[in-house]
Image 1 (tube, protein in one colour):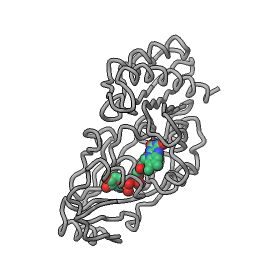
Image 2 (cartoon, helix red, strand yellow):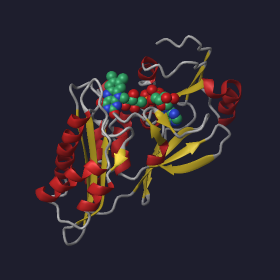
Image 3 (cartoon, rainbow, N blue to C red):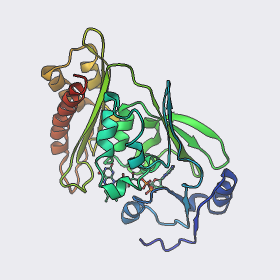
Length: 291
Ligand SMILES: Cc1cc2nc3c(=O)[nH]c(=O)nc-3n(C[C@H](O)[C@H](O)[C@H](O)COP(=O)(O)OP(=O)(O)OC[C@H]3O[C@@H](n4cnc5c(N)ncnc54)[C@H](O)[C@@H]3O)c2cc1C
């Protein structure tokens, strides 16, 4: 890794220490957590001017707890640990289990939830699942101030987030899902180490009459510049009974909400076509988890 201007690697243990680093380096300081995507950012020319790396892992952001309201996941919890969270075996968390299983084990042991979100990479899997589960992010500033924002509001564009200089993700909250809720995530990739060409995370709840409600359809993998919910697909699903015909219609409806990328890996047309296939399959997978 080449960071020619790098002067310091810091591991602050308090907010005051963190604040001091930002007073010195301001926007020339870069947070690091698991460190698995630093090379990816550098290779894309996104780390020029970085003079200090700030490791977040001694700030006590590694809590993992749940209660009647939901689960709070510390930003530096890694994928392996999150995949063993008590209660994650419920159908409602199926999308998160699916997404956490995507990267190879070495990455799962290092990559953190906060890093997966903050990188703002539309090709990552875990953010799609977290969006389908209505995740809320707590962001803390170097001076200690904290704010909560829906996960979707963290994303501003490809590799661009809305966090201010010195502001970091402290934790993520997943509200407790309603009874009879299931979710699923499916990814199209070219090989086991590839980022998603297409990713689809879905969630639905079945009411007493067997109709779907509170549907979520989240698309990633380059179907848009950021992970995006498809309101059109969700409208098709809500109030309908699950089945292949309605899943097909929901999959077609994503057309209204996507703006697929064309790049060296595949065309926009291919992404759009496969996005529909993966939405349909993910919906079926979610429903299968409830029977
Ligand atoms: C070989 C390989 C295979 C992979 N396969 C997959 C895959 O199949 N699916 C998938 O989804 N992903 C995959 N990834 C990507 C992986 O998920 C990310 O690299 C990881 O989630 C980033 O988390 P991290 O903790 O390592 O972040 P870091 O690399 O430490 O940081 C990434 C970015 O986030 C910022 N950051 C980190 N933590 C915070 C925080 N708490 N607050 C604010 N900013 C922060 C950093 O400043 C940096 O800009 C793969 C990566 C590699 C290298």
